[in-house]
Amino acid sequence: MLRWIVFIAIYCILGYYSLQAIKTASRFPYIYYAFMALALVILGNLLYQFTFGDSDGSVLNRPRSYAFGFVIAMLTFEIITIVFLFSEDIFRLIAASIQSIFGSSGEFSLPARRRFLSLIAMGIGAIPFSALLYGMYRGKYDFRVLKYELEFDDLPEAFHGYQITQISDIHSGSFDNRKKIEYAVNLINEQQSDTIFFTGDMVNNMAREMEPWKELFATLEAKDGKFSILGNHDYGDYKLDWDTPELKSQNLEDLKRIQREIGFDLMLNESRYLQKGDDKLALIGVENWGRGGFKKAGDLKKATKDIHKDDFKILLSHDPSHWEDVVIHDDYHYHLTLSGHTHGMQFGIEIPGWVKWSPVKWRYKYWAGIYEEMGQMINVNRGFGFIGYPGRVGIWPEITVITLKKKVVV
Image (cartoon, rainbow, N blue to C red; front, side):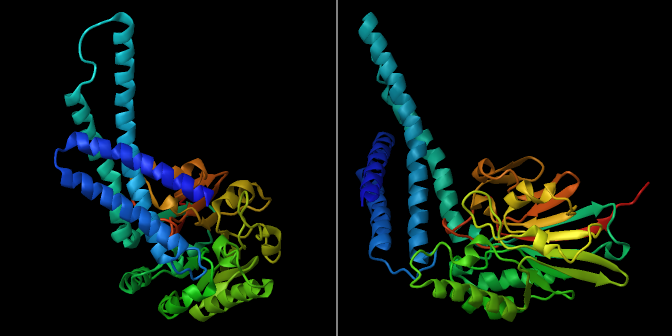
């Protein structure tokens, strides 16, 4: 209760301060009233959804997620506006102090300057506000196919040109548009890859979230099979009100069954071989291993007990912190690791060859795309779905297509 009181107080203070900017910039009262009404509706909806709204027990209840998204958009607008006006208030305070001390004459309050800054502040604040709304409306389903060609000295000859499609972080409990998901599944199949890898987080928390979608995802096709692993959300750890431990355990078993029904070969600290003639690739799949408070069920030693040290190895591991903390330092050489988990925070700026930024980089060193360390590579998929903020801005949902190439020695 206390945290709600604190949040409401902060929200109202920010809203009041932003209202002053609007009053300074516009002389039309209906604009003030419209802003106040919008701010109150957004706050009221948030309070209703989190106190009286229905909860199905999953991490992402759709009405709640949209309520949260609208609040984030409003707070972003207000904070940017306040930053500009607060700097102006500091300037005015300093000017007033100088006038008081030195007795200089003149007006230190400059209405024209104040109005100009208010207009600038609202104009800049409107950009992320609009972007966040767009992200909820369309950005979350703006699927992108990202293609990479990766070269390796010791790739087996038969696998030169071998094509992999990776998807990650489906978060099926978040979906609210079947046509968009059908489009994305068809887009995956259009790549006609040799194999499909799914790198964890099929649901937000509960296996039943995937039930309406399993027949659709069962249409995914790859001639050498479909393989999957578990992510941190798949274990049901974020639902705190399981009636019994047995129900939580059964939820995980149900999710494993659903993955089998879809056609995925779920690897739980296990390995497989992909064979082409006399050549083969070792495929390793570990359970979730994450830094900090995330589950550490991944067991690399157990997963590799049936493969050889000199095999060409592809590792599926949901959290890229596993690669950073464990994999690249292991005795075995893992040529390529495929991860997800970060979602690129579903927010950022990417202009290929120019800019690649997201706040998530402050937590994860390897957060999106291809990286190489100690002669080993990782691809961190930006995610297929979304969770928390029900949208994406700048970091779009990703289908990764990787073609393996044998490096030509000149």
